[in-house]
Amino acid sequence: MHSFFSSTKKKTKQKGESYYHRENLIQTEYELCKVLDHLESTTATKTSLKILFQSRELDSIIKKNMAKDFGKESFLLKPNSNISGHEIYFYHITSDSLRFLVQLHFVDDLFFFAANKVYSDMFLSDSDREKIVNRIKNKYCKDADNEIIEFEVIDAVGNILYSRDDVYYFIKYLANNPTSQKLKKQYKCYVRPGQGQKTNDKLDGLI
Image (cartoon, rainbow, N blue to C red; front, side, top):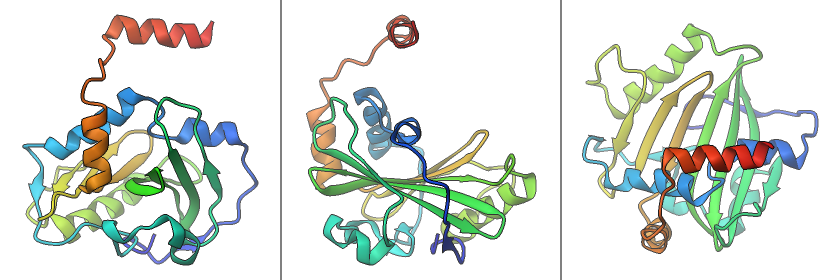
């Protein structure tokens, strides 16, 4: 990814549609609402810099320019979900020992969210994780505590960058644009399931 590393597109064995369905970070209305909640964050660290995705301003990501700006996608997923008009472009990128699974989300052909899943051939090493964390710190929040490895950063126009450290390291970009604001209004009446309902829904899918 150009915003963090000098990188190249990786030639990978072709993966099936089911793989990309699993990797999709917004599979349900519930997951969409969790993403959009970051627009109202009161704890995000302010940055004077514009939040960029692969050296591009978030508002400059346009569907008709995807091939020119990002190259041929590894897969274009059109999920069969209750989120109307939702499409995700996936890319596999390498940088030295690191692997990135990139996903860019559009609704009705308009961009609103992107994410990088960072991993390696095995589990992400402490040194690789430190490399990624330091890039984020040095770019957006130089005063962050040394122990911090997860971030939530907001720029002057309300775009959000946030990260999560799990088995993999995820860096997520949420545009504060008319599309995300429209989605927030559209799904504000969505009733989020309680824990019991989520458990039942999961069991229904497994049994």
